[in-house]
Length: 321
Image (cartoon, rainbow, N blue to C red; front, side):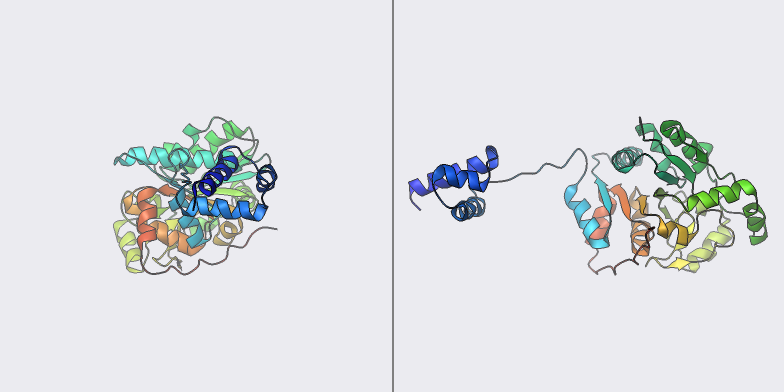
């Protein structure tokens, strides 16, 4: 290719990529066809004359986020890059990204459902404002007062200015009779009814090890070992899952919280996961089809995507009309 042709290719590239001209405008300016303009733009890219660099927004890894979204058919995925090896720093980064996602997708009139969890409890601290929404607690209380769902419902309601629907019952109760008795309470019934109207839920991912699940910590050592032997690998909203994402009904008659069918019907369910101990649990939750979106760290995302075998597609989530 001669210098004149190279010059024209460079000029076309500058007009298109730097000056924002359309192909038709460039063709009219240079007296050539728009098809030749398109060919020259392709040649400018393939020859290396033009190099395009896209910088990820803030701490988000677009490539990992897109890969996870495509593999599991998710609606929203934020994979957070953190330079720190400290778990506390990762938790803050994931909580911040979750707050940013909520700010971008919530609209006035939405009904927000929240699970409990240590990472979820950090979300409110990164929010300054939200549209007017109702806030509904999805699961009963467990763990410290600062990391249970009732406290998060209160803090989010202060931001939204809308009504709140707490669930002042334990996350796991001793037996089915106690669960039935508590469910008969009119305040509990009102919250459970409101859960069916939730349009966006934020839920935690629990791994079946000590310190990584409030459900695990609410049970005796004998109970947790029995459920581990039954195949429990993960939980979300106290719904137990095996490594393939299949439901294990070990606590269904004792858990106080959103029904599986109700959770699956919520249009947007954002799972929040952080730390290397939750890699397998996060994969199980994604396989289950219980969630539609994910906010996580780069270590979890990379580990899930590095698995050589192909994950089966998760079950289709039934959407509300």
